[in-house]
Image 1 (tube, rainbow, N blue to C red):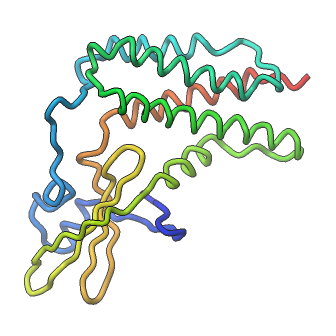
Image 2: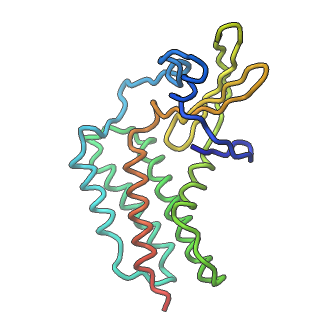
Image 3: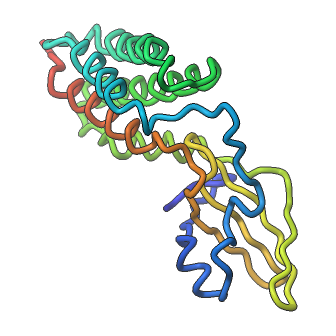
Length: 215
């Protein structure tokens, strides 16, 4: 995993590799320092039928032909369809309104960014930025370091640990001692819908590019 923090890109070492390198117990991870409260937390694991229906509704709403002048409007409409459908199935998923709005904002941000990337490429007669790059830029721009500093005693060393979050929740940790700073990836408590959302965004943006009409 690679995230940009304070303008600087950093490669994150997977948590399993970091534990092995430093002979750490299995409990060492984001959950040790900031455990997740599952009280009244929404779940998608029992809503497979509903989540598939949401995906189908969004993809079906994509016009077969999208005039260039209507691209941004079409992208915004698809995000709105996602939002409406998520509210419609929420009796099964159980998200809080703020969580639905946050998910909607992510869909809207990425689809709009990709639409503008396509427009920019057309106007400048340049190769369009790939969806993967747009998505990566969005996810990296959402990365934040929590202010709370946790103390962890590791042998004779005292480590300072800060949790790193991105759009899907806790993504990892920054671990510092007197001699080094480590960037550690740990998605154990991240949003379980990350794969679903990433796949849906991939499908939406692929359709936008394929059905875009320049004339």
